[in-house]
Length: 423
Image 1 (cartoon, rainbow, N blue to C red):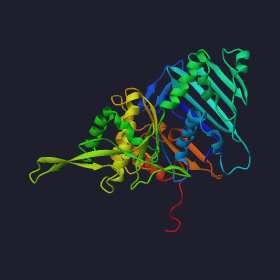
Image 2 (cartoon, rainbow, N blue to C red; image 1 turned 120 degrees about the vertical axis):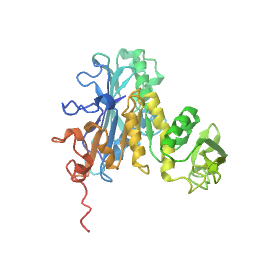
Image 3 (tube, one colour; image 1 turned 180 degrees about the vertical axis):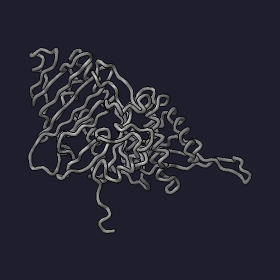
Image 4 (cartoon, rainbow, N blue to C red; image 1 turned 60 degrees about the vertical axis):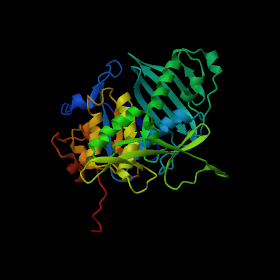
């Protein structure tokens, strides 16, 4: 589970900005506590051991909503991929600042009933600082790195001299190759948490492979029928394709936008084979018709495509108690579907393992459902073009019975662009 995430000097973030999943402690912020929050061991989070299940970020275009998720994704990629790719060198500092300052990431998470705080800083394409701490009852350092100088808890100085810390690779990523006693357990816990993090952006490949698990097909069908989309059944369809090799590498000549999956040396187009009932004039089912989600261009709506690409991963997060990030949760979806997804996370029966959903959205009606003020966040740009992130619960004088969407449009919570100038 995620407790907090902080970022500084990355993309549109100039100053340190924090996304907190810690529930507000204000006396008037106790609404929907049983449904929308959950408690963790008080020893892990003293005095603030209640976390929220959802955080939905609203804001004007180009205000930095997606950059919140992209910052978490970059941190995940650096942890998982820095041993194989130049992730650290591809850091994106805040563009409108002449000063060369570090880019910093910090995350607080709970894994295997242990609280972890992990952070690192990058300057000029190299790692200048990295630290992992943990708390079972008290906070202690697991390892700390200043440039190439490394100290690992419980590991003697002689052994540490044999550990070569590379400037463009996180020690957390390298450490899985060393035998470090109990430290290895903590490192594996944090690596597993990042590996389990589900990130769903529309342009990401292989989203449809989730339905190779029939459990998520069955659960998705129930929701599709509630939404009255008309799909009676569906399954994953694979079609082998042969790439052409050019100076740019392997390329695919595709007649339609498709998802491609590589399995060993074989490449497959991934599609969804949906089935619809065929009726006679008396309304009796006489046959079924197969329609491919991607191949049969123009049949399925963009909303149906997006829902099927996202829904399986949403179900997996709920099933396994994972943290899931979704950019533009409501894009191309009917309000009732997006609202259903939020309600599923803010539910006891559907979210028994306390999964957390962090998403961006534009549909302001989602603010006015059974949502706590600390689950609503806003982004805006300051004078310097930097993103500011603020929770609705941070504003004073916001009544529980307020129509949040109306007040937002009136500019009570954040300044909106003036779109009436030429009208």
